[in-house]
Image (tube, rainbow, N blue to C red; front, side, top):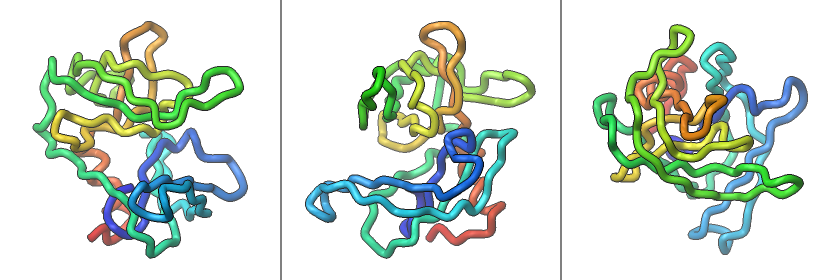
Length: 170
């Protein structure tokens, strides 16, 4: 969740091709910590960058995150990823993994990513990558076919993405 009005950044590839998109929110300070599910509107989708902006129609007090400044991450810095990886039929909700930044500007196929050694797996897509201050430095979009190499769209690109959809995050 970014901003205070129900905006969500995630990966475009996790959205269904057709039909509605649902977002489940667990907020310990609201609704007794019970999960709530909302039907979200897709405001913008960029399949090339694998980013999507959703809007959850709620006035509830939802927990949000801050996007880190462009220069906030350095190689060797410890990072944390929150995701929902699959374990067979089960989904391991709200799983935390840690690693270090291998490169803050890894170039792959003409795109720039934050590369990390944090463990990511099927179900990690769309998960935020946090720095040691709790700011989001990237959005996990892919894993290499080797262990210990995952990639995230940098926060600077995430920050620009909603503005291109002409939304007010304040």
